[in-house]
Image (cartoon, rainbow, N blue to C red):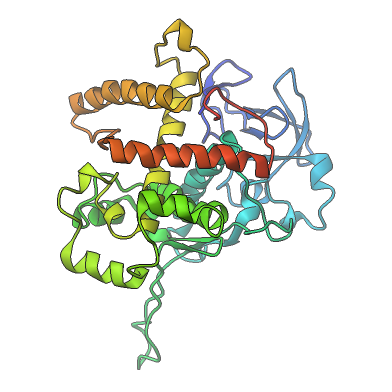
Length: 369
């Protein structure tokens, strides 16, 4: 993730929608690919303040109306849509269900979900991974549901039915996130109760998109190679493995073969957990590169090979882990990269290389592979 500069010279970050020094509105320009100040025209449109760009822009509907997004749309592109409420940015168009905004606190939770989703999709673009919508005729359309549990009404004189429990997960291209995960207190309770090293919103997105890409890139395409590393996903069945996991817990000494305890549950979860760890690595390396936090051997400058990625990730992880420990915080890199784990990560590395040919996207970093 890059760090950007406002029109006034102040530092801007990926999540910003306003500069805290000059108070100008800022947003992601789809033309020059960065966070920049917005110069208003007075008619609801703006000019990108980047002197090398100066694109004519308008806000995404979810930015203009709800302030949960910070992405802009090129006016020429926006004029091709039918109505203002259809004018969603390249990332918000994947939303199928948003939280009930009549419920107090849901707008703030939705904002947190959108921040994490934007970081996820930015990383997918960084890796040039294919994804698309149903309207585009994409093979496995991607969409997001952000929903809350439905509790039976306590005001009714009788209970007319049970509530509805929303499970975070993936099914045939649809990623569902229970908005309770956007509540930091509730999320920490779940992290402790489930014995997880990390439990973050972005972690949920990276894990669930792993299931999406298993279905898109592995199913009926590369299952033999997958089984050789992760195990047979058909035996035992997923439901059998799930029951076994919650009855007996993770496999003994799981860290010798798996990236996390939950990865031991079933080969699908092993793949999704490993995929999420790979996206963690790519995102951290991209950020470290842009923040000049890495040191390089001159002969390896610009290298994109897997071994260099791992070496650099461990380099930055050790340093930041110590900084976090100095502040009494959790390690940024808690995983142990044993040889079996490295082989699984390398498989995902190769899988992503092959996926690049499905849909060409611009190379944004030395760490696109």
